[in-house]
Amino acid sequence: MDEPISATERYPAKYWHTLSDGRVQCDLCPRDCKLHEGQRGACFVRGCVGDQMVLTTYGRSSGFCVDPIEKKPLNQFYPGSSILSFGTAGCNLACKFCQNWDISKSRSFDKLADQASPDAISHSAVQLGCKSVAFTYNDPVIFAEYAMDTADACHARGIKTVAVTASYIHTQARRDFFAKMDAANVDLKAFTDEFYVKQCGAHLQPVLDTLTYLCRETQVWVELTTLLIPGLNDSDDEIARMCDWIAEHLGTGVPLHFTAFHPDYKLTDIPATPPATLARARKIALDAGLAYVYTGNVHDKAGDSTFCPSCGAALIVRDWYEINAYRLTPDGHCPDCHAQIAGHYEAYTQAFGRQRIRVMPD
Image (cartoon, rainbow, N blue to C red):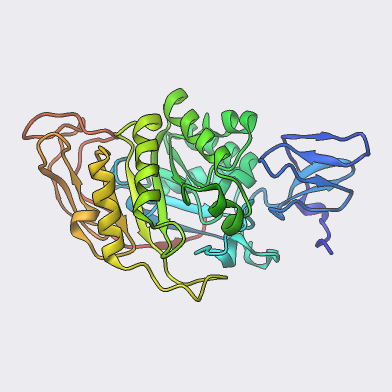
């Protein structure tokens, strides 16, 4: 039984149409949920009320924190800066390995205690000295209207916007949503459709379509993250095929983060990813010609750091989210060979560091 949709949850949604049998179909993502009156979609936050689609989490968040930008992870989008992060509840994927399952799989809105308008969020970002705002924790695709309005408010105050997303989204919504984003970390969960179907309840091709669109047709800065799960998506062959596809279709300058899995949610019987697996994946990616390859969720200074792909110089030396050395010029060039390093940069003074600060918007 779907949880009743209260009057306070009924924000008019975009991306839907009425079917001949009276149901409404959500056109936001490839799930194409078809709903009767009072029903909610698979994401749980979009529902049918009065023969219309509504978003039930507009202006409601599961929490706000100030993070280092590297935690998103984004290593080449204003490195060392701070970012105001927030999310809502629900998700349009059904990943058995979800690392934020208490938020993304929530079927109770008790967690949505923080109320914040788009203007309040942008104002808080300015007051807290944040360079950008991240839509994260759960997938912002499902609260697209809220995220897009917040992005407009942020841009009006000179604040950048970041989507941390699996990018499972339809064509028209994709254009509208990413037109509001300055950067995105896209979760490329694996490189087989079998994995997406069995482990995520989704399909691979729509994600590849979104990535191709972002890298070929927009100015959005893109970094990729793949969580390597032992025995499911960590074979040399799959990693090599994924890296070859990235090089051919997205370009060798797109940063790729390999991160370590830890047992969680419905995959508690699989061991954590060994650090050696991440090191092996990083070598495969570098051998495939990718210029910027990182490792995450493990202690690996080489995998944390940014190197010049032309001369090999260490340009941003990181230890976890701590920057120990920063040698890039303000416009993003290597000081040794003068090669341009892909990304977005500015004059560097000091890093925000590895701290996380819980905040409540004004």
